[in-house]
Length: 283
Image (cartoon, rainbow, N blue to C red):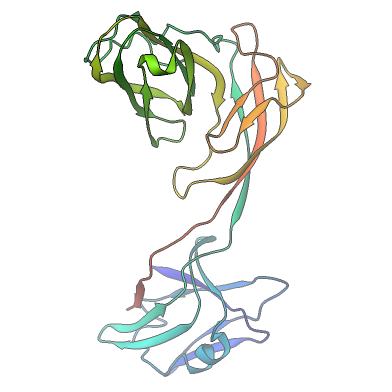
């Protein structure tokens, strides 16, 4: 096990224990992360007080610990407590700086056009789980077509979105809403169940089909924010960016999706990693 120690001070900091020492170099520019520390040998046996210089210089600052070039956690006020196995590094601040990721996604020419009945055929509703005929061809919002007639009832959709998160939505199918087409709030990569409950006075039909909004993968956890699409292509040629839903991470292409076109989108989003307050023991 090893850690890369990031020194945020303007000068080198030397950690000393007996004849052993480890140097964390001064920062260069905005960030420097320094030598790997073998915690099973070089730092074994360190106790409170051995980090005195480092504790003084880092007090109140934001320090990062890296492993294999990846920031694993950040600490605010850094202290060292005695531990029977060595040293406990205690951190009181655990939010790292936000990261902005840029990606590209492609949808093939087999992407289907929007319609109303391919997922669940239009049927007379009843208090049962509806039969799912086909899954969405790609992650996308769904369309629920309600032809008025039922006095009361709720259709609950349960599935998984393009990031692998649970996607659940309850849709009123009663006469109070009239005949309508309801677009789901989220994209569905998979629709697990579509169940009607609390219904009465059943009449009319309910069907589920594919929407025009295509689901763009972002981040499962932590959730992405500030989602934006900045370039779009259809059949390899640039076109205007279509309608973007920055909450559901979807886009309706300017050229409506159908099997005659392929699509590519370039986009970015922000992720802010977090970590619960915890101790790291060097032993």
